[in-house]
Length: 53
Image 1 (spheres, one colour):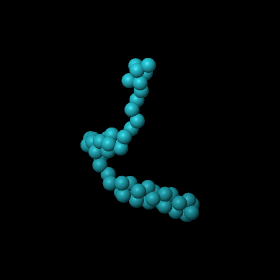
Image 2 (spheres, helix red, strand yellow):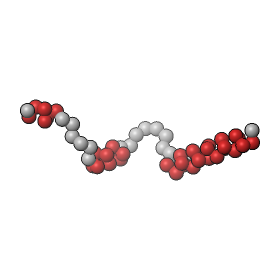
Image 3 (tube, helix red, strand yellow):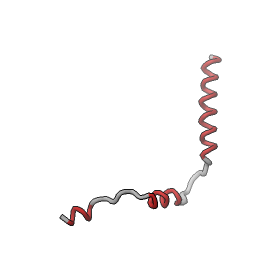
Image 4 (tube, one colour):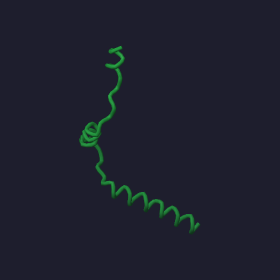
């Protein structure tokens, strides 16, 4: 029975998640605020285009 216990995955802890998000990766770095503003602007532009059309 102990072999089943050894193979069971451990639950994710907050320390593991913090380590994951603190890792530096290659690629484009964009602040979350810019993404939020850009998506809201895209929605607004599409609504205006639908109203004008």
